[in-house]
Length: 67
Ligand SMILES: [Zn+2]
Image 1 (cartoon, protein in one colour):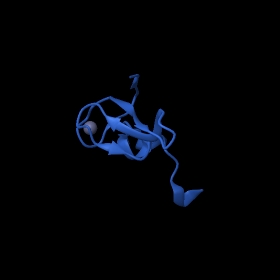
Image 2 (spheres, protein in one colour; image 1 turned 120 degrees about the vertical axis):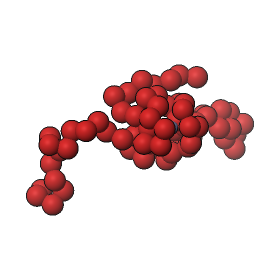
Image 3 (cartoon, protein in one colour; image 1 turned 135 degrees about the vertical axis):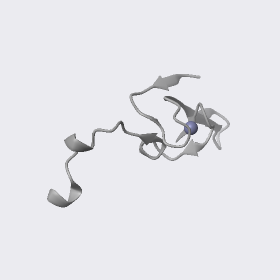
Image 4 (cartoon, rainbow, N blue to C red; image 1 turned 180 degrees about the horizontal axis):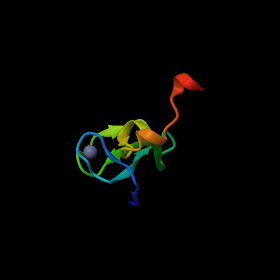
């Protein structure tokens, strides 16, 4: 199973990689569910955004309120 290295890290445990969750479909094949599992704490997240915690670059991020 592929492991994705990212510049992000798990907000729960600090691990820097995750795996795609593979599950069996109704047709019997194994396919990605679209979810992600942290390689550290093994928690499953709906998407990468829910898993990761961007590095501290608050100064460079535009405020949603100013858009
Ligand atoms: Zn984790």
